[in-house]
Length: 288
Image 1 (cartoon, rainbow, N blue to C red):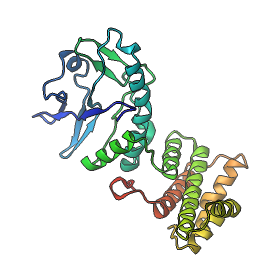
Image 2 (cartoon, one colour; image 1 turned 90 degrees about the vertical axis):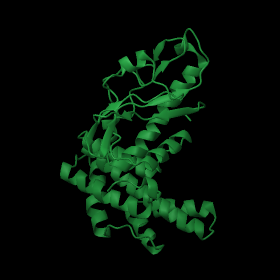
Image 3 (tube, rainbow, N blue to C red; image 1 turned 45 degrees about the vertical axis):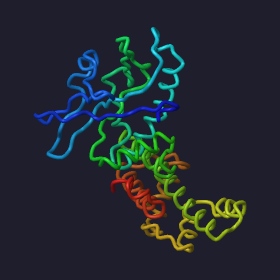
Image 4 (cartoon, helix red, strand yellow; image 1 turned 180 degrees about the vertical axis):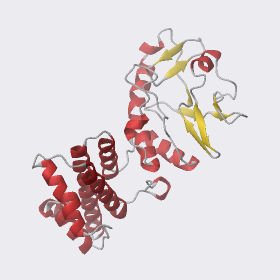
């Protein structure tokens, strides 16, 4: 589901020479010549015996034919829904592959949705919707299906895992300060979520639980409470103090810019904590 529209997706086909070619239509027939020509050589490529990189995929959606499809309410809702849907899919797939989110945006094309109706017109979405399915990498069929299911239901990854993604994105872009702050935030949220879950299982009142978490205040105290409740963060407290909390505090409050080495370590240790206390479901577990 993309917004309110049910869409049938089709990945490219593998040709005899190992390259990727256009998928078949929903009816099992070749796509229109206009689409084949527009996307010729753009479906993706094979990088190893068992791995293909997919740059574009096909989708079938039922829309009312219109002479001005780009102005129709149906296409507007599809375009609006596509933006949210694609971002969620990117997040889940990036978690699994370990690819930075910034590598997903392919600016070679001006739009992400290209519609071909029975009337023969090829319509592109507004330019702000950029091409999807770049760098999917080593996703299994079930992992891809899982990402599609989550995107269809509007389910983003848990906030601590999303924050890690943006920390890695910042690190890739050279913004070490943001990388450290986001990494520490992700670890803190993961620890707080673990504490919340454990206290909820003890059937304590929700208001009391939230007050406890608020009063604990800070990653160091949350770490201690997490351990007291049986959690195993996977990183020593001394490391949390020096490599995460200390570096974050200097960046957030001291105005300093962490080095790349400091940002690398902060992200590494924060990732360990998040994976240890707030693991994703097995099928969508992130790559270490």
